[in-house]
Amino acid sequence: MTTIREKVEKKPWLGWLLFAVTVIVVFLLGLLASSIIERRAEALFAYTPRVELSEFEPRNAEWGKNFPREYQSYLQTTDTSFRSKYNGSAWIDMLEVDPRMVVLWAGYSFSKDYNQARGHAYAIEDIRQILRTGGPAGPDDGPMPNTCWSCKGPDVPRVMAEVGVAEFYSGTWASRGEEIVNPIGCADCHDPETMNLRITRPALIEAFERMGKDVTKASHQEMRSLVCAQCHVEYYFKGAGNYLTHPWDNGFKAEEMEAYYDQAQFSDWIHSMSRAPMLKAQHPGYEIYMTGIHADRGVSCADCHMPYTSEGGMKFTDHHVRSPLDNVANSCQVCHREETEKLIANVYQRQDQIIENRDQLERLLVRAHTEAQKAWELGATEDEMKEILTAIRHAQWRWDYAAASHGASFHSPVEVSRTIATAIDIIQEGRIRLARLLLNRGFTAEVPYPDITTKAQAQQFIGLDMDALNAAKALFLQTLVPVWDSIAAERHASWDR
Image 1 (cartoon, rainbow, N blue to C red):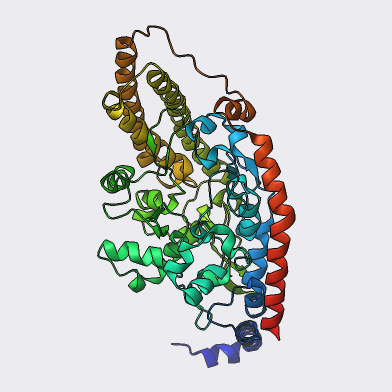
Image 2: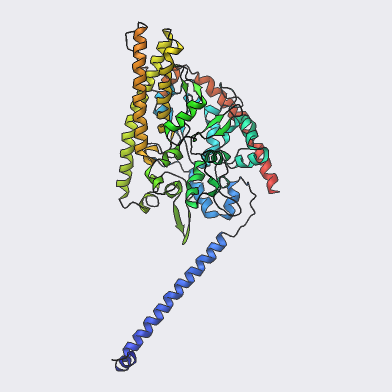
């Protein structure tokens, strides 16, 4: 057998070739080693703390000094340019888009003002602007509870730690206005010492405890959804102290939470037309997500809404929290191999089909409220109306469960479709009872469907004085808000000193 040495002696050029290959390999390995060392040094420099963060540091810019990449991506939540087929990141007047909702919420503050939420960076500004929080006492509903601040920013866990959880909930919304000034951000989800994900809202821990689960022992992947579940959930204000509570004792489905509320004999308000004891869904995104295929496959909220990204060879979580449709490559296509256009078309198809049935349910609910109002006018009794009002309550709760959730038709299209279908069945049964009652009262005509083509027409139909409400809101923004900001600025300056 001929050895390599013998081959080289016979062909001297072969030796030079081996030498050149060796030099190239060594050079490339050197580049690789240099790149690794450089990236490690860059990572070490990037994550070397520049400021010391207190346990409840609420200022996102302070966290940004230690974690500039994450902070810079977070600042992009101020971008309101993205628009999908249904909503997006812009401020959208949802009552103008769908005036039927004004009638569905008659007698409740959402009939005055309901807007598509913008990015996390606008959390404080947006809650100050809406008519539902018109000032120290609200425009006409009495004092808004301080519990309404609970999900709006990292000042909340700070103040809870200072005054106590129950004490925080028990005040009025305006009583903490100068304290809750920093929008949703770092301290809401992260431990400042370890940067581990953490739960800062006690209601979530308490809800899981009632279900026999210790959420503090959740895995990192589970935490990538649970930190979102602190706020993107259904909740209600329990008792005279307005204690924030998640109604999950029976489960996450609409019927299971409905049973919880019925057993507690709880209602958010009495509808001003039908007199039905109503439930208002907040934004049960986590609950609906938990019934869908992505949760079943172990995909977290952050995997789609805050996917990993790279910059300069460094991998980190993109804190530009947004719709996956605005970031298909990093969100959807990590798992799905279809083209972007195909994936977006699939989402829109599901949204179209679900919203078509949801709109039909809205029309039936508007009819039920107006028909119930007519029944009361004709002298219907409480006993005659009891089952009818329960049908309205249950059907509208299921509509709201589907409508109020962010991304419901994507997170769990099968469950949402089923929920809407059961609501249509319930409200039609209720309307059959109403028709019989109206007939027994001698009313044989059809109750006319109201002319509610625009938000203004719908608000006029239910008797809202929008001029007075807008004037009260303008006064609040001109007087109290500047005082709050001034106090907060002085406090921040003292912290720096």
